[in-house]
Length: 453
Image (cartoon, rainbow, N blue to C red):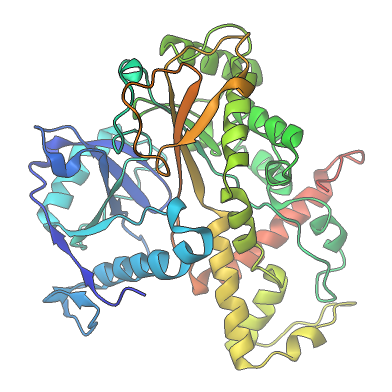
């Protein structure tokens, strides 16, 4: 375990040297577009967004001996704790080859405030209500997973565009039956995955216009046909679960990711035309060929199984975790007919803490994203047999022969992002959300809807 964390100092230049690249629920990412600076080649900067429930705090003296710093803020301390969490807890579980924690750097708060103003108009409207947190003085310099900068590719790749696919896979397992699960919903919860059930809530709230055929259980199934089908369905109905970058720029996403609302045919047409315009694909089978590419890479790696293994640390389901949460906080437990809590009442204090800690860790991996970047020097058409291609992980094979111009090679790199910690205080909200999803699903699902098994 790393016991000493050093905050690096970089001259970031003017805020105008940085351009908006993307964001999730908690962070904003910017890329460097200023005068040449080798420190920022192949890197992006990530900053925390302002927590609207938080009161800004003045600097406080640091009592954390792990940090080389004269002073820190409450906001900074949270970022430091997140960094240590990713490095010391998450990375060993899912593999350091998939985790890019980056480098913590010291940033002047006035820089963050000016940057916030500089990029504001480039951000999606639905995201821009939360601004950059300029009470902090820490940023993260991390690898740009949408680009290839760490290897010298063969000369025949010099004019090839880089294609990057970002997938938010969501929950890859079905919970086990427990005697404390609400009997009204337990058969639903153990037969239908959270993603598929949540679609009905989103539809009722007009967040989406059609229910997706994507099911995470298919993606995590290790069945190649189910996996390819799941990728096709993500592309046809992306919502906020898939994004496409070309040469580092976000070119396609769904309506919940900041894109426009499209029907299935429009999504297929938009993606096909986009990838043809970058001379990556041609023909009528773009979606199927792209799906096969992504599936091949995922099957060559262990990323899905490692994500699923951590997700399954949620052993008790939110219904069990919420019961333990209330027990920890001395709250009265409401009795529900037919529900037996004796299994949970046997747990001692340390076991309860362990179950809740593992649940929150599981929740982080239920909401992570997988980034897959790839580059190939030959346009893929309907007659291209991808089985003839050699798929090469560039981070595992960084020493590429510059004279090797074999057309049947595809270089890729893969990483996991969005590894923010989940809050203990959010457990009541998770429980309420879970019950609302189940209620909506039970009321509106069709009788012949196939299960996710």
